Length: 389
Ligand code: 13P
Image (cartoon, rainbow, N blue to C red):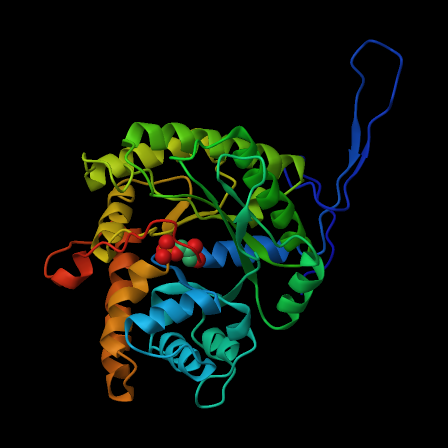
């Protein structure tokens, strides 16, 4: 646990204990504003956690499907959505031997944070033994945004501080909040502002309770638009997100981003090559993301396993100011889940497949991946319209 540290550098974070002593004056001349800059109790630890997650050749395994979404996954292999089946699948994932070589963090759903493996160890302890930081999904999902163009907003701020404190006690060290922006529905200025503000409030609260916030405004793949339109919307969204992160005194050194890659819409006739996706996405990041941010951990968003890895690899062909890596759910788990099929005798084969995908993305993080020899199954897209998490 970090101790409260008085930080002297002026660029270092404003956090909950900042006291702005702006003097009100009738003097029309600009007046000096003095700040007492005090770091939050967890500042040092947040920086360390974020750096560890953003370490070379490693990325995040997103396994935080809500029980409803996990049920859909299990149904796809003919299994019932019972706690025992969810536990069996999650045990398979966290205990894959050697996973920590490629995976630095695992995002869990609340049930898993408090769950034991099938052989009675805490899931969190198994992760820590593997040198994988446990993370926790803290948003409460999407609901319709009244007054918008059929768009949604993300719930979860009520009681968030006490939930984060309890999750920290339980072993979580980072958090995730996923909100979405739809391009075909506008997006409206209202929806973008709401998404950005919610992310910023969440990030400030998570940091105040020792959790590194993953900031995830997912720009959905839905739509027929071309890559230029995605780029335009992404620029707007990220400008707004960083504006509100700064307004909420979020410490940039202690966050991680989880953006969508800049691609054409799923229904667009013109496809983009990995080089085009990398060019557009890196241009966006350079324009919008300060180098103080340690890591950019992309979501896969319905791309095929191989496509997501190729795109990541293309982004790592030359050095970047941030660690550019992955935080995939579908693009790490898809073939693994199918290989398992709910059968105990397939656990090892399924873990091997997970390790193949994790290693491929580890190589892509280092810019050294080749798709040679990849199975046809790993090239199948997984896009679903209006995907929920
Ligand atoms: P996908 O990689 O399946 O898009 O998952 C994204 C996500 O937000 C999981 O935490």
